[in-house]
Length: 223
Image: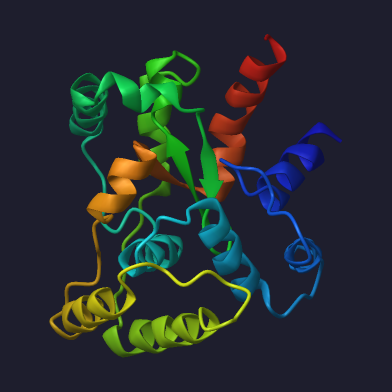
């Protein structure tokens, strides 16, 4: 029963902010029902409600990460640990004043996990690194297939109920050129980074549920 609840928690809740209010709320809730065919549309709209200062490149990254995960193979656990430690040390102190978060990506294949959980000792560094290593997988890029998928998602962003990502036209051209040249991954925009001050790692959902979520839930129970 507990595991079932944890799974539903990951599946249903758009972490990091409250659910949207208003008439669109009903449709957002509907997109989590079984067999709802507009899942992608709902999640994209929910993302824009959660992160309204997103540029188009940030939406692209949100979609790309859920398809390709860590975007590269990981094999050096020591290096991964050093990078996390260095990022925690170098981050501005104000970055850690926001609530900790974990946020499922487009189709719940992967989860963004705040490394603030490591900083606060909720998730041991070694456990986070192990989860990342287990989430790493080879990626067989198919430029034509991914480009087609991205165009389908762009069409969904035309929904009048969805907030339009910022800097749309300029980022669209940048992304198109990057895909054509074989550079699929994108960085977050400066606006996103300065607004949300997030430091996270990507973990596969099943690994997150098994290794990390129980530690987070236990820490909340102890409060």
